[in-house]
Image (tube, rainbow, N blue to C red; front, side, top):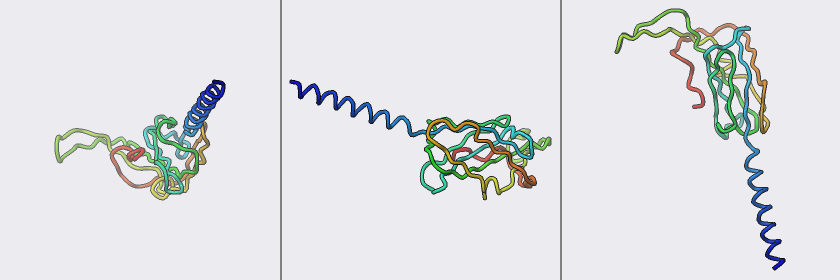
Length: 153
């Protein structure tokens, strides 16, 4: 009878440790993004695994701040970071092809060295990664777009 009790306790301990190991692997990340000292007001940030394996994740940047919760697929490791900001130009455009709706013209201002050909990196640890900030400097890009590039795709 004693042997049975030890087996139950051992099995319980094993299940507890297995569950504990499965819960601690995720990583959350948050911080700020500025370009030439100006907070990115409505943009996007992507974290792409540097080794090409794993899940790409991202978030919206609002008023210069972003946050990616751990449940969005982040794992500890090295990431390439892409930042996009289709900044409003102040001009209004009319959709001539369909509805005639008015929309704000936007222009991609973040240079490609910080997005499509990024040189930015981040090393994420398990758990919380706070204050992963990006203070970007450079000459504004000349591309045009309608809204931030898809985040997390």
